[in-house]
Image (cartoon, rainbow, N blue to C red; front, side):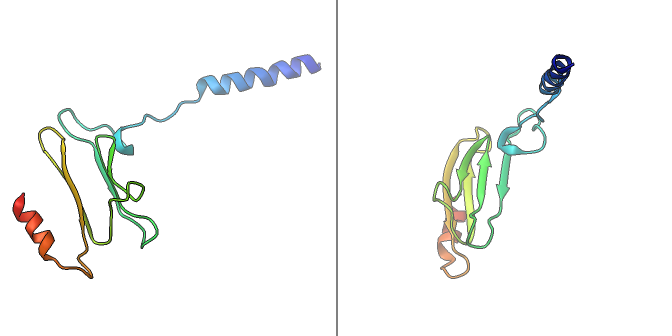
Length: 109
């Protein structure tokens, strides 16, 4: 009886592994695939000064705390709308800093 009981458990473990399915993974961790000729992107806000914001485009993390290229204020990733090529990434401190650099950045686009 022990042998058949062991087989029962062995089969149920194999059946569970065979039938378990992972949800599909889409670019940048979004919930569904983007239509053809569209770019996948995700922006996530930070949490106070503990977790920085994160910007992802086509499964490439452009800005994050890990890359050390984010800061307080407005974080901007500039990309070519036709090719998806990243042109620039910057952050602008709109709270305690000067707004002139941000205005100049926008004028240059």
